[in-house]
Image 1 (tube, rainbow, N blue to C red):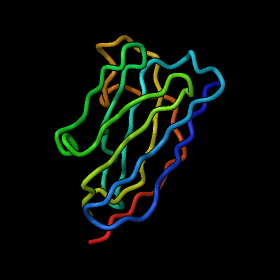
Image 2: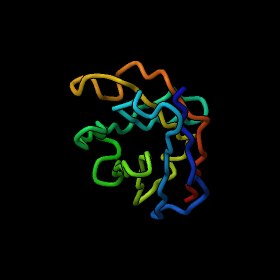
Image 3: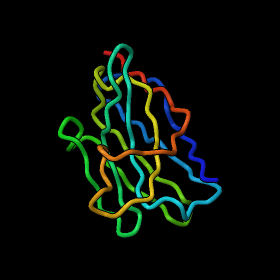
Image 4: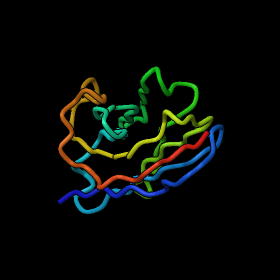
Length: 125
């Protein structure tokens, strides 16, 4: 089966940077779309970035555009979320998810079935 594991979370001050990693293992061929989500306490889960593994096409939500970047290293079956200019509002548990879908359905609105356990990001002011 396919599994994904996040890492790289931590505590930073506002304006700082973190890079999250999401490593896939097992039946890695069963995913061609990867995405990052986050959930802050008391708030709904928010999809923030997606990447189509086949050609590297990415999509990010407006709230993180210009600050966050999603990328991949196919040799390592790993997807990254580079987060710059972090704000206290970015504080949340960050989750990685995987999906096998057509390119036009690779976005944070899709029904992702494989999820990691999450990694905590805390940004202090």
